[in-house]
Length: 170
Length: 427
Image (cartoon, rainbow over all chains, first blue to last red; front, side, top):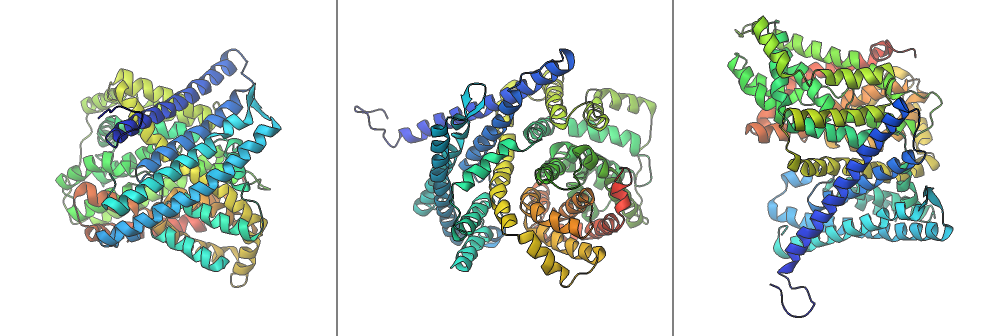
């Protein structure tokens, strides 16, 4: 329910969350379609016009990284990551809940550490002013790393808390 | 201290933490005690950008998801039924060939069992095959075709090995050709087993009629050129692998969305998202493994591994026996992508020193992993089949065991007859 004042009420969280997910999907879909369009353009230029865009190769490779990170972020929304799913299949449900709480907390902590060091990495590149391709600086391309790991860390934390509080994922 | 921490990380792996997190954790411990700043982790992950051929992975995956979303499975079963159904072993040959083709294009994510197996299982039972046999057949077939281009694990193996700077490099094309005969061997042995196993069992065979053949060909007329475009393009060298991937996506998009209308435009964002979740999961593991395995190579783990193995293994043959046993166990607990990404950088240098060709090694590795898909107790396809056909998991264990032995025989032949993989190549 919208209220006066700027604070977001608890009822607005799911709606906001849904919007953010939709936006994330949109970016992912756009990245993949651009990748496809760029790859095709290169094939056409090479075969029919004997030409090519010189930064296309670098751009495509960076798009692969972005698609991978965005895909991994979306995977963290549900249990979409590859894992050794051995124990949980044979554990009693209530026990599995606490195991899952702890593994999510652990995942959150690890992603948080990577996000921190990725931010350091991006800062170095920002100061060095290196160029990835065309006029695009490297740090812009790399920024998906700290951002992606921070989002994943946050999502693992939320899942861990949900499991601890409600015993299931809300 | 390092040992305790490593144990904790390993414990988390067994308890079901995502594998990329486990690898990151292990890497952090390693870097911390080697006094290497942890900034190396994002730097290594960013090396994904320098990895050649990677573009092919998201594109082929998307194309595979699109095909799985369409009614290709129905058309494919119909087509193979007309042309192969009259043979002895009839429908079982149909099942093996269809599944192999479908898996090669959709990447062995278990979708073969859901899309093709679900069509074939009732048909097999109706034709007179026993239920247990049919169940085992469709579950086993779910991972058949991993060795055929353009399957994702095959490409991933090529990608990983290529960024290792081997003294004796190979091309993806060579890898694609190397998989042909071993895959054929598996199909032949499985068919022979099916005929032998049903020798006292009256099986209805299909009949070849010209009318059926034309109808089936006509229904699949848009998909039949696909392998010719993709494989012909790659094998002939007309397309680079990533170019073939882009062309495949466009072709499949046009056929399934605009000509057949089986995938609606408004479903595309969902299909893209689902396929990229899978790609993201695989590439993230690849990225973090680049960091970790480089650390392992820096501290000369493959070297130590080689010396350790040399202590009790003398020749290539004994090494290969050991390798097969280790890989079968690995395949039973790890999914194929994680197994590839984690193990290949360690195994390849060791295997080369024992005189194993890296192309042959790739085929052996994947053949092992293919069996891992339905190895009890946690082979992924067992659970997918159990869910899809509403059978208990123990029933599936029993149903698949005979097929597993057949494929183990195939594995032994593939391993000890390198010519099967390398005969068509100049290696």
